[in-house]
Amino acid sequence: MSYENLRAEICDVCHKMWQQGWVAANDGNVSVKIADGIIICTPTGISKSFITPEKLLVVDEKLNILEGAEGYKPSSEMKMHLRCYKEREDVRAVVHAHPPTATGFAVAGKSLDEYSMIETVIAIGSIPVTPYGTPSTDEVPNAIAPYLREHDVLLLKNHGALTVGCDLITAYYRMETLELYAKISLTAHLLGGAEEIGQGDIDKLMYLRENYYHVTGRHPGYKKYNKREDE
Image (cartoon, rainbow, N blue to C red; front, top):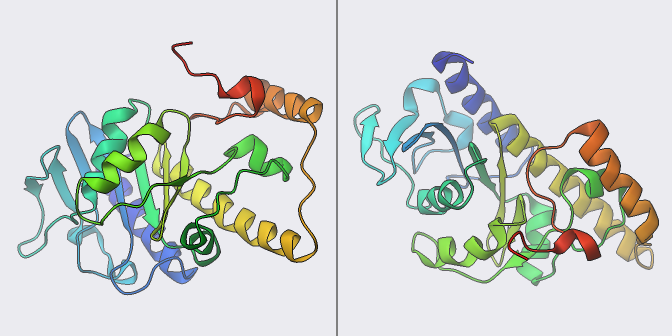
């Protein structure tokens, strides 16, 4: 993808996030790693509905601005994005938003750790709530770091959601999947509770994930799938 097309794609994702009600006012941020230590990101203080290619910034790993229009600066929450890139070499894009239903689970301190929907098992697995951290500080990066090893999708306690991917569209799709699953899970609980998929069927879904769908990223686990890499 050309540099210009990538910038256009970031803007398209920002506009979709706003249109779907995942962000309001200045909420949320998006970044893409284009080379070691070089990242394109959305600026702070601007609604995602107003993002245009020329408003995007190119920064280094210390958030020094390498390219960008005068008056724009990166969000302080980029510290969270930088931690994702540091912890995971396979991550090339990060999306942070406040999708209402999923964020409702985060505010309630409830993880989405049921394996009750086929598409979610294959795509993202269980979704934890990370410990509370004060925005714009190192508390949030430190809170998410232990979870990044096995998860591509995180609920940020009392805050919102974070997804990572090998490219921007993958990270965006994971946010879509998260919010839809949160809505379905909430409905299921209102109806008396979700019925989880059995371990044998999860094994089959994991086989499909690895051998048919070839899903990238990490999959947190269920029994044999939650072993640490160093074990």
